[in-house]
Length: 82
Image 1 (cartoon, one colour):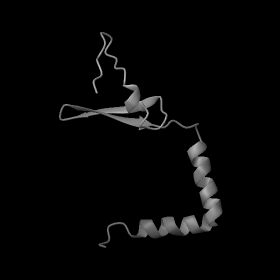
Image 2 (cartoon, rainbow, N blue to C red; image 1 turned 90 degrees about the vertical axis):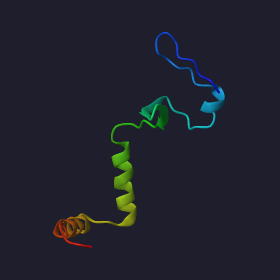
Image 3 (cartoon, rainbow, N blue to C red; image 1 turned 180 degrees about the vertical axis):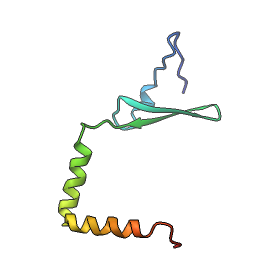
Image 4 (cartoon, rainbow, N blue to C red; image 1 turned 135 degrees about the horizontal axis):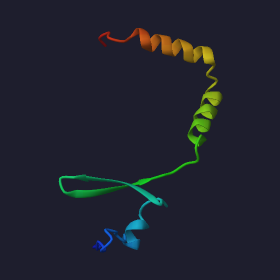
């Protein structure tokens, strides 16, 4: 399929292509070796991801003390061979 660049440097993506990706209004645009790469980006409400993480922690029964121990353990392993 072809997409033509307009005089204002805009592209219209073919409808058939857009039907194959999730509904999105934003794309992460990069280039690699002269190839244009578009990746759909899902925007979310501020704080919604944090709320889902907090809910998952609650469902797993993880307590603040568990997190403190995990942080202490991870910091103590710095620089050690695995």
